[in-house]
Amino acid sequence: MMKVVIAGGGTAGWLTACGLATRLGGLLDITLVESDAIGTIGVGEATIPPMRNFHQIMNIDEQAFMRATQATFKLGIVFENWGNIGDSYIHSFGEIGQRSWMAEFHEFWLEARSQGFGGSLEDYCLELKAAKAGKFATNVQKTKLNYAFHLDATRYAKFLRQISEDAGVRRVEGKISEVRTHPETGDIKALLLEDGQLLEGDLFIDCTGFRALLIGDALNVGYEDWSHWLTSDSAIAVQTEATEPPPPYTRSIAHASGWQWRIPLQSRVGNGIVYSSRFLSDDEAKHTLTSNLTGEMLTEPRLLKFATGRRLQAWSKNCISLGLSSGFLEPLESTSIHMVMTGIFRLIRLFPFGQDRDSLARRFNDETRVEMESVRDFIILHYKQTNRTDSDFWNACRTMDIPDSLAHRIELFKKNAYVWSDDTNLFRIASWVQVMMGQGLEPLEYHGAGKLMSTQALQQSLSEIKNSIDKTVQQLPTHQDFIEHYCAMPPG
Image (cartoon, rainbow, N blue to C red):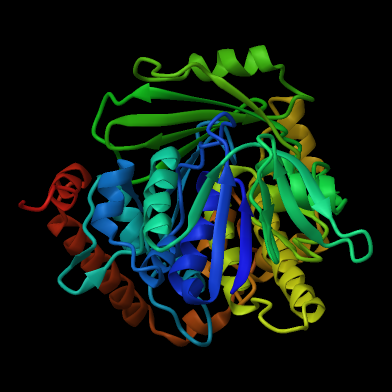
């Protein structure tokens, strides 16, 4: 059996252990080493819908997961004060309207608006309307909502640990004192722990977080810094008591020099502020955060420092980095846990069972780079596409140079309302449209397909979609009521 050693626990480590043990367990001898004395980041409490696919493939029961992690449902993110102070829009997880092969729905809606009808684009998305109404159900009358979760990351790691150990993963308690490499090949041979234990392996997976003990310290793989586009380098996190029923969405509230998250769980709320130390001191950020909390603080505010960017190689020699050791993008669109999961899927597909490793690693690195760059562009869009002039931070964001790939997307949308998605892009057409238009980017022109319909036919088509969504939302229970039913302990 091939010996796999996972360095580090937390969400990334135990997700990796769970994924490998569940799908490849009969072929691997898996050991995970972690230390109770080393804390984990543990603030990645919001997710995106592909997490449900991971859980299904790993045979994770959704209701058991939600009970174990105090999870709530998430239909999207409410962005406040991003385009202009006082503005608010929702980036939801749903499709907008009905798609056509010739043109996207928002282009038909733009034609309707030019003729004086059609209402708001928000009227044509079920998940968005349900989020605003505080309603939720996994499905109603054969209509399934596209949803994700808010969860307690520490509880999630413990939940995954139980599954992993039941599947045969061996956990070793201890701190890594030395990473031993082969003098000729440079491959990692073993991890030496402070208590003298030596963990030898064939393949090593670095889940040591920002420290990157294996991929960075031992193998000296460089880091591509993206802070010239994403200037935030600090965050402060704190938990508070819940003061109201949890809404089925995350809140992202922009401030003068950054933004604040608010993530509702069943019994508490996760809060934090992300900011740039170039424009805001740690003390000022802490004051901004604590001045905008609801409910008593359950924990002391915790300061985190980070560098936005990616590892030049996520897979080097016989070491694969997953999670924070492979790179970091701020949690604005809740992508951190997702990218660990896609990395696990990628590793399972490209697992080096034979003699060839280099070509597999090259493919793994190419796919990882493309994925991270596409998510990076989407996050940069939120900062670039703003009209705010009230602070040096927003002036810098609004006027900064951006990657050519993003500049091309913005130009196409502004001039033609055109948006595209592909296999390498995590975010769908509806996501790009909601953020661009939500932050004030109005297309100058659009596809003429809507002009092929008579005014009456276009009105009727839009009215039917809107009325169907309104009817469905009316039938949904409240988010709180559904959680209480869904997460109730089964009899016995």
